[in-house]
Length: 612
Image (tube, rainbow, N blue to C red; front, side):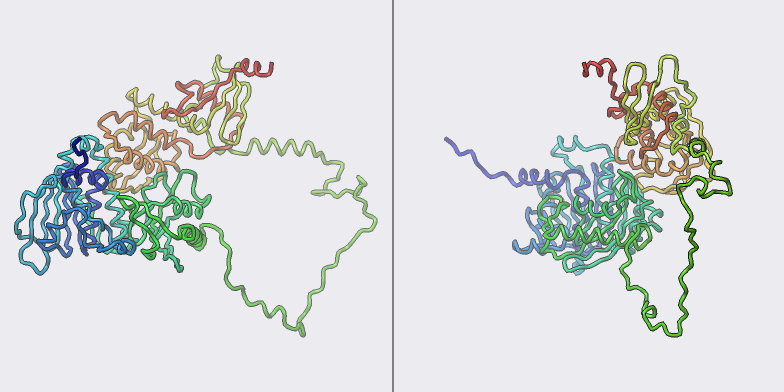
């Protein structure tokens, strides 16, 4: 029988390796930008065409490569970073395996131009699908330029599964932002489809954060710093007011390498405690400096998962550092362990000191508290004139009439004018744990999730308005509300402006990343508008959907979710009855637009049978 085991050709092996290293255009940007940083570049320009499908070009002013190094760089496991296995555990550079360039060249048409400072001419190499097509001298500036064209041209199945351009470009931006935050000493220029998209000049870490995430970060960042024998911590955390429903502004770095770690995230969230609402996330930019021998970065192809030998202790220190910073800024109460004032004078001799005499208390030895005629009087009225039951009833009446509900469901849902109707007879309503309403209507028991029901109500209002080609009237705000979003979120928001205006949100562009809201629909409280729009911008950007295709349903669903309740209110009887009535008179009141259960219905007859 013939032998069946054989070695794979290098081109096939490189394509297989590329499946791990080059997952999408963002992977190419990450690897090439990290190479530029390792080459000691101070200026990096990233040009993207067609979200990386057509071309990706990375230009740096680093040290460049010699002719031999340029050729060797495309070989698998060719690297200048390590020489033996021991070096892996002391690595401080970004890339070190020597797989990236070989993997990229295996699935694209790649061109390299590079020159060292001491050479008059540089080198140009053209490779397509791991095959070298040409290598020749080239006149080029000092540094390196990689041009990657037609990514996945020889693996059409992988190219087919790339997402929409907006989504792929969002992934690219995420990789650039991670690298730019870790390297504020390097300037980054982003060119999208031939036009300048963003530029992050050299500056401090705080300046870099503001240039990426907007001016709203300027006064909301708190500096953190601590050091122990195992780790040095520094960076910034945001005040609770900056918390959002997205996590795209949370960053961990170890030795300037971005990573993700659930245990560290848990430490920070515990430090904030109840300062942020559930499912809201404060921004943070945390840098850890640690001995490379105490971490292992070689456990994942993208190197975003890292093992720490002292993970538990670092978590404890991180939580304490963030909590101390919040307390120092008077955001949370903190114990004061500083030295107390000098109270030694209190224990000195009391000679020549005037001693205050104790107060004298007049006692009435004949007072009997059990005699009705001896009871104390209030407001100069005799005791027998007091009627405690009446007083309590008046107090209860006053409390009921003067107290205001935490949430006016009539205003919020715009359904307050709907009567209970002849066919709906609400017999009782009870709120359970502020989360559910249990209501008896006719011969059925309805168990209603309040948050999900509110989402359904808001969605129905928006949907009926849009499908009926109507515009929801807008109420002018007392003062214009200014919001600032990230660059890529601004682009998504611009596309959705006409639809948002149809929903009653009078919003217009006011600068590159700034928008102004002059009016809101009545079903969104003015104080919630800023958060609603920022949350909406994040949601539509993360979705990657093209709003030219089926924008209507997604906009309505996203705005309804943003405008619906995010905390459970206390409700009185009238509020609950009105809320249940509004819900039961809408279509699809048993599920949310996302398909989650809103209402559980139990037939009373079926319940009675359980006890027979």
